[in-house]
Structures are given as C-alpha cells and as structure tokens.
Length: 168
Picture 1 (tube, helix red, strand yellow):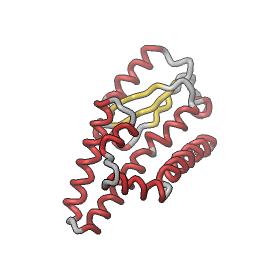
Picture 2: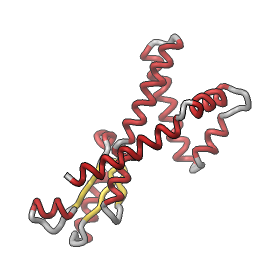
Picture 3: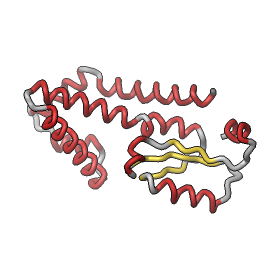
Picture 4: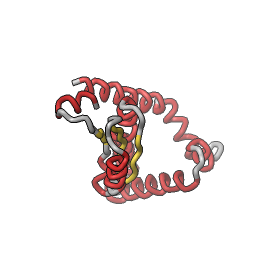
C-alpha cells in the first residue's frame, strides 16, 4: 500500500485482490486499506465488492499475499482437479460432455453441502467413505500420490510468488 500510495501521490489507498469467479458475482475479494481511508469510503468499497461475491477485509497487507494463494489462485486448483477428473471420466468411457457435467455438478453440490453443513471437510469425507469401498480406494491412491503435499506446496509457492511480485 505504501508503494502504491507513493507512486500515485495518494494517502488514501485501498488494495483489492479479487478472483476470476468475481466475473459472475461468485467471487472472493480480499482487501485492505491504508489507515487514512475514512470509514465511509471503506463501507462504499465493501458495498462495491459485494456485487462481485464475498469480501474479506484484512488488517495487514501481507494477509492479502497469503489469501492470494488460496482465493485468487484457488480457481486454478479447482479447474485443474475438474480437468483431471473430466479426463478420467473420458478414459473410463464417458463422452467429454457427460464427464464434464458429472464433475461440475458433483463439485458444485459438494461445495454447497460443505458450506451449508458447517462440518469439517474430513468429517464430510468420512461420511462418504465406506470401509473397503470406492472412496477408500480413491483416498488411498491420492495419499499415495502425495496430493496433500502437492497442494500445500503449490499454495505456499503461490504465496511466495505473490510476495515477490509485491516487491516489484
């Protein structure tokens, strides 16, 4: 914020990091403001950002870099999983269109279920995992392949990159 303020010769600076679902009003915008920004301006920003989806005000600018790895980069994770599962569906014998619909509706429903149930993701996963069943086998393969580690490392790398870009 300091750099932005200096380059624009402005004291009142608001920094926002949206994500691509904001284009359809389903986004997540993380933002912060310099201390000089008055409350009425902050309220106006909140109202504007809510037109794009959800908004989250953070106290410190470094939290925007942290949030970037989860919310601004987050659609990348989602789209890659969707792409991989759709390709798997095609490999299994579905048309690409049917595989895509199965994946999209399942992901959409799963996210809605998670949001409405307010349960921890592990609890929801356990609800669908039968001993020796298909989900148990899928979990075994994902853990064996290091999915959690890959996702964690990717999120941390995105955070580090956001910090680097902020220094330019």
